[in-house]
Amino acid sequence: MSFFGFKGGVHPPELKAAAGKAIETVPPPQTAVIPLAQSLGKPAKAAVAKKDAVLRGQLIGEAQGMVSANVHSSISGTVKDVGPARGPLGTFVECVFIESDGKDQAAEFKGADLNALSPQEVIDRIKAAGLVGMGGATFPTHVKLAPPPGKKIDTLIINGCECEPCLTADHRLMVEKADDVMAGAAIFRKALGVARAIVGVEDNKPDAAEALSKSASRHGVEVAVLHVKYPQGAEKQLIKALLNREVPSGGLPMDVGAVVQNVATAKAARDAVVEGRPLYERVLTLGGGAAQGNRNFLVRIGTPFSEVVKFAGGTKGDAMKIVSGGPMMGLAQATLDLPVTKGTSGILLLTERETGPQRMFPCLRCGKCYDACPMGLRPALISRCVEKRRFDELEGLDVLDCIECGCCAYECPANRRIVQNVKRGKAEIAKIRRKRKEKEDKAKAEAAKPKA
Ligand code: SF4
Ligand code: SF4
Image 1 (cartoon, rainbow, N blue to C red):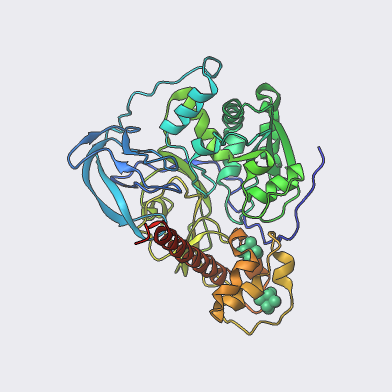
Image 2 (cartoon, protein in one colour):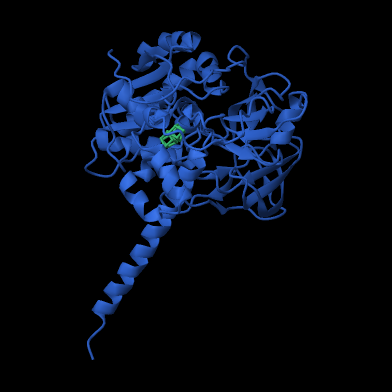
């Protein structure tokens, strides 16, 4: 097939030191701290109470409303508490604390034959299993599989790019569980009712492409090998690279007839439908110069980061920075006292040298950030408007299209804090729009009042 590429982007060092390391299993934690907010949208509501006995895979949090996802226990034991603890964003969220009984006893999982299920039954199984986008976006998977009437989907894309430096969890999953990933792709294709499904893999993972290709014809899924470029794993860039379709400003992949799912989500869909097993564990990469080697681990949801690090042999020297996710788009964290969640693709322990230069210089107006931005934005101008608090000017600059990829900051020779400023700009726009709506609603209510 032809490839079309995408504008902008960068080529950071790959640093994929764990690419050849097989997935190892971290033992279940003694206490699992499982956040009820693990997806975009509304947090789940606790379905258990203190002192309840639970089994591995049992529902402990019920999705609330359309954009929300169920949450399941990752161990068997007793609910110690339901209360606040640090969640995936480093803020306090409602969590279920489960003390292990050491038995790791599973609930009864009921698998199904895909051929015997209707598309809606497939979606229902995926919804019940609490699947979310495991590349980091954590959007509830069942919502993506049910586009609104009028949106015609013709292509499913399975995202196997894993373009972030350091991360190799998806890579290993594609090598070691290629057939399951392809079976998951076929499950998504059935749910969406589309004829075409493509797995996109970058050419720095030839072993993954080879493993997937062996299963491709059995599941009727194409494998496309793309030249490495960051951020090719972002939905809009992958759609452009594979299908030459541009998602409009403010739009979604479904606006151009595509749905994108991550390879780990595809594997989880296979487990949910074929085995009836909910999402209670995931593969992640532990890496960075302050980690004892870079490795890939299968980890139960709710396991503290500190236990993963301990299992791997502790730290090597001082970690200057803890990152949840990859070095380009991941979130800096203040502590290892955080639970692994469905969206945790990596834990990085970075040294001082790896955190890069800290000193910031005045903008040189070199334009490198403009060239690097894959969304065609004007990062320096946006950043300047935010610094000068000229928030009204932001609306004409398409700030909400920013995918927070970090290409602008990566290319900036002056080390400007562009991404932080753009994120702040997005929050300010949301605030301006909220206030405008409140004002409009108030004016409408006034106008509707009967005249005296
Ligand atoms: S402005 Fe946003 S989308 Fe553009 S390069 Fe910077 S972070 Fe990426
Ligand atoms: S890359 Fe940095 S120095 Fe160059 S224009 Fe953008 S913000 Fe300014």
